[in-house]
Length: 372
Ligand SMILES: [Fe+2]
Ligand SMILES: [Fe+2]
Image (cartoon, rainbow, N blue to C red):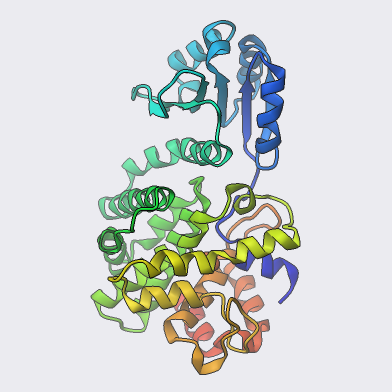
């Protein structure tokens, strides 16, 4: 497998392009410490007072503003007032870093992007998760205009995804039944041929693991529908797609979202997402076997060159073969920082050159299905 393909395959669900983040803090030492974390993922512009930041914001708006609370209450008021009052700027999410808050909280929910408080000392992973969630605000807001079933699919799956992330972060067991239920509208969208609206709606969301997982879930369900699966089986397949990379929620954000080539060591950690998924799903007695197999085998290859176990031929379950094909197809047709989004035709010709790694009979049926 060539390098770009290997990276697309495993790093699928990671960040495509750097967003502009403004950091406003009167304390340069504190700002430069956070810059070390943020610079790896975002194009960070640092300002020591709100006036300069406001000027820059009016020239070219950032995707997000990170502002220190004391700077906000002294030299940062102008930028915040502009955010509150201005029709255009009010959709820029603000994250306020505070010394005094009792944990993160949404300040108010008016007709604009909500503000979030994070308490110092700042936990890097928590900050990166909050940035990703804040950046997705306007995308989620735009879902209200979509047809009902597509809207329900997007809302129920992101809610479920956020709950899963919280459960994993706090060491609580997952509620697989909830994931099963959250996928019901997706199955209906596939049956009524509305799934492309779902794929369009999720396109600019900033939780890349969610975007990738929902795209995999959608195409897997379409695949299941095309081969004549019953509704209940399709729902299991959807849930399997949504959960196939669940272990990535235990992968550090700076590796998951690194726009550059991963080091050897980082690759090992990234590939460890399969074992994390196995551990996470393994703690739950009621996980359907198909969901487990999809999560554990989607990076295995028929010729034994996959991971984590290097399974071969008949050792690979049929659903895992389907998931492997869909996973690679979704990664190739998605934009990443190291590659553009490939056309469906190009993705399929790359997958055909992978020969014995994939079940080429299934690749052919998937190609025919996507073409229809
Ligand atoms: Fe994966
Ligand atoms: Fe994946």
